[in-house]
Amino acid sequence: MTTTPQEKAPPHTAPGGHPQRWLILGVICLAQLTVLLDNTILNVAIPSLTREMDATTADVQWMMNAYALVQSGLLLTAGNAADRYGRKLLLMSGLAIFGVGSLAAGLSQSPAQLIAARAGMGVGGALLMTTILAVVVQIFDDQERVKAIALWSTVSSLGFAAGPLIGGVMLNHFWWGAIFLINIPVALLGLVAVAALVPESKHKAGDRPDLLGAVLSTIGMTAVVYAIITGPEHGWTSAQVLVSAVIGAAVLGLFVLWELRTEHPMLDMHFFRNQKFVGAVAGAILVAFGMTGSLFLLTQHLQFVLGYEPLDAGLRTAPLALTVVALNFTGIGAKLVLKAGTPAAIALGMTLVSAGLAAIALLGGHGYGGMLLGLIVMGAGVALSMPAMANAIMSAIPPEKAGVGAGINGTLAEFGNGLGVAVLGAVLNSRFASLVAVSAASLPAALAAADSAEEKARISEAFASGLETSQLVGAVAVLAGGLVAAALLRRAERAESA
Image (cartoon, rainbow, N blue to C red):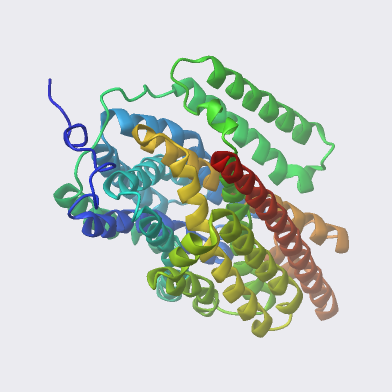
């Protein structure tokens, strides 16, 4: 019987980890950057898509959520498959699928086609996001894993910073479809590098993919988020919204029951008996909720309210990401996590993220100065909290389940991303609709239908008020989630020491 490299000499137990671990980390982070660039570039393109494709706010939300929901539903299955069939194999497959999906998205002619292409890209994204973190866990030992995960999470911030800049430049010189075509050369480069450098690793006893669990989770989350998105338009008590919400809750309940009964669950519910795991889960969802939801609002704030062009708006989102990069590439973030401990790092980090969101809402309404302060504070919070939570989740999962652990971490992040866009977008739409009686589905359409300069000013002010309200909602949610996560992690550590 042929053994895998991991079975011969498990990197998890080798002193110092894999000899080429830092070079491999750079390669797989390049693959991760492919996915992250797409998401952040799409945020900058929201106004262009709204105008050029005649897309409604709901269309734009589905362009973002179609990718997130498909990826969320497949992450755990992809993690199981990676553990069983090989992480390198699935990493290369993910890059190839993502590149093809990007080509289809760039050539789309309607919102429906773009939504479908984004869903296809979600399949490739699921394969990428699970295998990347699983490989990191396998090639680094316990001493260096926190630092490696901090650098891995920093790539998210690089994508956050580079995406708006690249998107702004491309939208100023090319049509919107170019923002997707930029993924193709990155995917090709990643394919070559992964094939040459990344070692294959798998476990002979890896679990079979839980296809029914994947279907149930995808349907359930899609129905719930659909209810959230359409609530402001159709009314929260309308039959369409209530039926969708009930179906979503029922299907997610069936998902939990199936996972408890099946021999090879996609998500082992017994993990939730681990307080350390539960605390990290709560924090991961809320950070993703606040980050993605705030970015969805921030790009509209900069372009629709403050009047910046796409490139200028992209430049002005960069301080958040650059703060994260500065703290983590210098090792400051990882050192603070190790010195203060995971619970304290998460509590402080989430408090800073919440304070940054509140500063943007309260101080950034009429100029960029207050927004800049909020972005820097948020960046410091993300640099502390994200690596701490990812490490907490992965350390609570057995090494042979690294793919599953990465799938759980990615699922939580994507679930938080989808909810952030949906919930904060719904708050924005509800507040906007309550202040001005307009039938238009987006701000540009409402302004175009206005009869006078006074009415346009009133509509713009109402939209700005809606942004402020939704950002404050996000700040409260992040703060509450951070404190709960830190308390659960502290209790878990005390129980372990006792």
